Each structure stands twice: as C-alpha cells, then as structure tokens.
Length: 187
Image 1 (tube, helix red, strand yellow):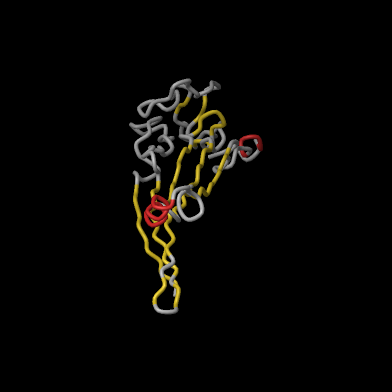
Image 2 (tube, rainbow, N blue to C red):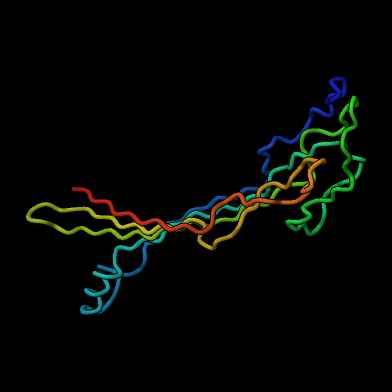
C-alpha cells in the first residue's frame, strides 16, 4: 500500500524513461559494377558478380530503463559501479514492507537501470535486371542479419524483495544472431 497523502511517492520516472538514445542507419552501394571500375575485362566480371550490391544497416544504442523495486528503502542508493548478473544492484537498502504499514518508496528506482541496448542489424542487397524476350524483370536478393555481433541484452533484474533471486538478472531480452534470406521478383 502507498500513502495516498504523500504525493511525492507517486512521482516517479516512467517505465520507458530512456535519457540517451541514438539510432542511425546507412545505405552504401559497393564501388563495383558498370561505370565504376577501370579495365574492360575485369569490369564485366565485376559487374556480373560484384556489381549492384548495397550494404544497409541500422545501429541502435540507448541507455537502460528504470527498474521497479518493491519494498521499503532505508534511505540509501542501490546503485553499484560494476553490476554483474548475480548482483545488479545493492539489495541491502531494501526491506520487505511490514504488514499494515505504508510503503515508503515509489514504483521505480531512479538510480538503478536495466541493461543498455547496443545492436547492429545489417542487410546485403543485390539487384538484377535480366530481360526475357522484350520484358525486363527486376529481381532483388536480400541477405539480412539481425543482431550482427551477437550481443546479449539482459532483462531487468528481479525487483521483488521477498524473492530468492532479488537483485539478480535471470533472463535475456533479445535473441541471438539470426539470418534471413529473401528473393523478390517484379515483372
């Protein structure tokens, strides 16, 4: 139970508060192919094999969101300098709220945040334009990779004071590296 007469306890960071966020994307056409290289015999081979490829990607880096911790705080910060999965924050400032008493902490801790996000997704795209009879086909081959560097992102730590795993991270938020291939034909 939260004290309805103490409005300061109802003030808290939102669950999706993210103070720092950077998202960038790029498209890079590889410098091979028709009109891009010198040398006639090499140009034909390069155009057929290497020409028409694009390298695209998305980079995302953002700070973590605040962690919800139940129970009462004894007035000390729970942040530690080098959190580990087994000890994400200092659990000693928290106690279980005794029965029939009012909780003295807000819904989320402002100084404890979950793992920050760092991810790169990449795509290699090859465009072909063969012609059949008098019709030109547009064919696109895509090779996509999600979480290119296979970087784990961890979920929030357990914020329940009565749990055996209080203050520990027990699961992963993202998936491991994944590949996807596609072929698109327009006619």
